[in-house]
Figure 1 (cartoon, rainbow over the protein chains, first blue to last red):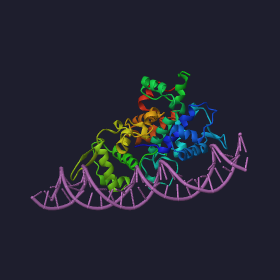
Figure 2 (cartoon, each protein chain N blue to C red):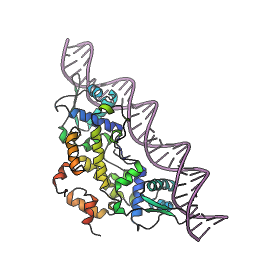
Figure 3 (cartoon, each protein chain N blue to C red):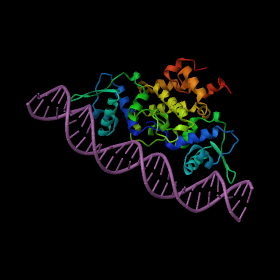
Figure 4 (cartoon, rainbow over the protein chains, first blue to last red):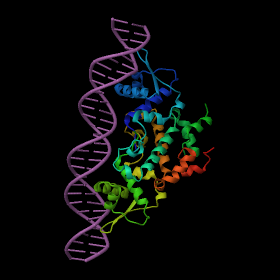
Length: 160
Length: 160
DNA sequence: TAAAACTGTACCAATTTAGTTCTATTTATC
DNA sequence: GATAAATAGAACTAAATTGGTACAGTTTTA
């Protein structure tokens, strides 16, 4: 399967959970672990990574916690995924890093691997966190077009 | 990283290699291994899987070999990937199989995982094997739009 | 000052994956 | 009909990745 790690899956759950609350509210790792039914150490680990990648803000000490650094409709799924899994690289040949592959000098499809990579990345860059917490609207919209429409063009047409 | 297995990567290389030849020509596993600089047993293994999934035809015995079962422009990258990696399932929650997840009865984002899954799947369903062996044209297209647009929805009014 | 929460590092176990090996079957050619 | 070349299929091993945990440290509020 083309797949995301479990931790990334959890990360999406955690981000979605936070996205359902007002943006200003803080969430402790403990609360999120309970709400999402995930082990606390794992939740902490994930939140740390999301923080380091600029998707969350944090406040230390008692009464501390994590919060979204932007509103959910401004956070793309691609950002969350690449925060937790590193830069998009469906295959080893799809990055700009050289020297990782023996075939490199004569590899016939290196450029094309990049194309595949980019297709996926761009499709996820247009799907926003806010889309994950509104299943109804998106489902309805897909019915119309049999295709997911980039959030940027979704938002204007959407009921607020 | 959101990633494909190495074997899938090799599979794309092998399919591309065959796509460069006339469709009627047969390719032995040995020849392909040499051409693509991959170990023969691995190549055999991959070709077998591609055969079982209906993407290749085979002829046994001396003078046997494998060939594409359709022309490259009718074979999508999504088909090749799911042949080698199983059905698309970016996360465990994105399939229709139930009972794999303890959170299932109350999982807040199961439907949304499906959405992510579908976005990726559809973007790859519109990218064809023929696109991988024509870097120039696709590159030019990307230059215009700074975006890969699925061939089918290119026509429908997504632009401007 | 104590408690609650984040921060960072390091480690282990389980799973998955890549790669190999061996045997059986089919088929064209001599 | 024998042989060589090729696919078909099953099983196994070793390595890499990943998930999960543990623990010590730092910050902040009450």
